[in-house]
Length: 242
Ligand code: ZN
Image 1 (tube, protein in one colour):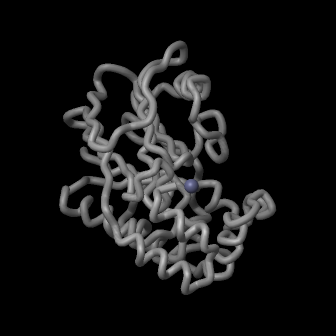
Image 2 (cartoon, helix red, strand yellow):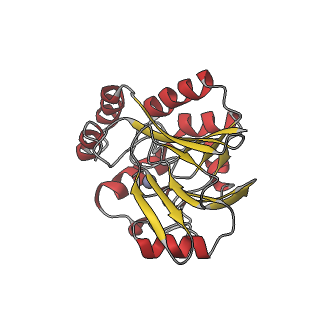
């Protein structure tokens, strides 16, 4: 089975479409989505309907839960709050129940999936050795997948010792040599200085994982955001991958 692991789409339909074109061309068997379908971007309903119709295994992220009102909106300041409030006003009657049915964690054959981390699947960021060790300690699957930080990450190890760090695009890992904690990066708002959509290919037959990047028309998403009056800083950052 070959799976496309996506995270943090953030209503960026142009980025999602570009990634899914590669997924279709690559004949993947499934899509696993690690949360934050909405927030920041201009096309929440379209992104929700695409992942719903494709039968993707989907998690909820903190932005999804805020938009649904399951987490108080005052949790978000500044532009994130502005975009979440706008998303609340446009979310339609099919996107809302779809998002409402999602949880921030899931299990799949050979893998455990979290939006944030095993310690706190909604809010915790896996950014340190300490949080990576805790993530291994709290799980048992060979492969642990997390999103939320918008930075592609590859960590190998266990609850006592970890190694690795930011993942370079194109890197392929042999999954048989160690337990792995992987973050695919963000489809819709990458934050590692590379504006291309970031995602991960996992092939369970060959036991390999490859970090992928996909070019998409950033300026189209920016134009959609400006037309809707979403915060300019959220549009501008997409060109820089920050
Ligand atoms: Zn996010």
